[in-house]
Length: 248
Image (cartoon, rainbow, N blue to C red; front, side, top):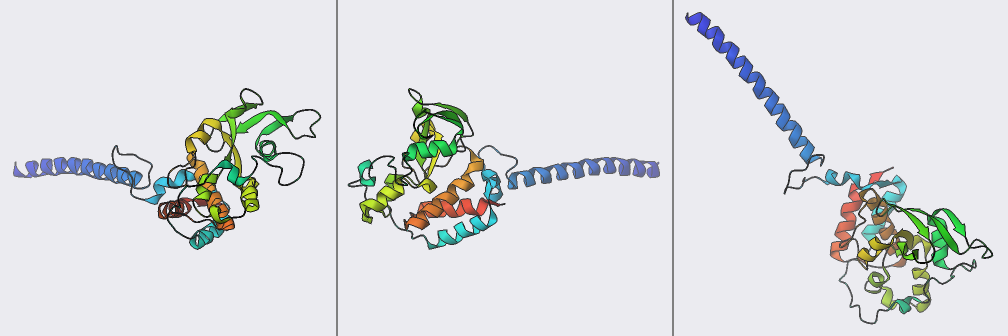
């Protein structure tokens, strides 16, 4: 009788032990998913940078160059906005490269798919095209005229931000060149551009997360090239984003 009871006890213990192993394994899987950002727990953020793994990537050489450039960018407080006006950066969309087309049309022609041009303008005035907007992930049909503002040209480093972080000391010619530099310009969704305003990396990021690496790298490249500085919060955010970038 005692022997049979002992065998029954072992069978029950075996069954409960198996359930316990499954429960532990399930808990471990959930924990791992939370750690790498694949599973979200309401009110609790995953603690590892891998939670940002979806911000996209750039070629490895470019990424390493951006990290080196970031280390050389000065960190200072934001200067007063006093004296800022769009006119401080010269005529809007000037033809600084002297190709016969203003900068806005140059960027539209570069960034739109299948651009159509106004006859007689030498493939200069863009009438229509399709924007696959990297900032938002939207596809936008551009039509010149009443809907022109659906697609706007973004200064990746905003002019006002540049003014408060070094551009006040520039010559008028350098500010004009900066405002029309294709490296700092990109066509984007109009409402998203209005939402961005003069926000820097610490205050605004593209809604489309896979574009954030490219966006952060471009800002670092432009600021390093022009000798602009960053605030402590912007510099820290840039470092965080670059560390989460995927090297391609």
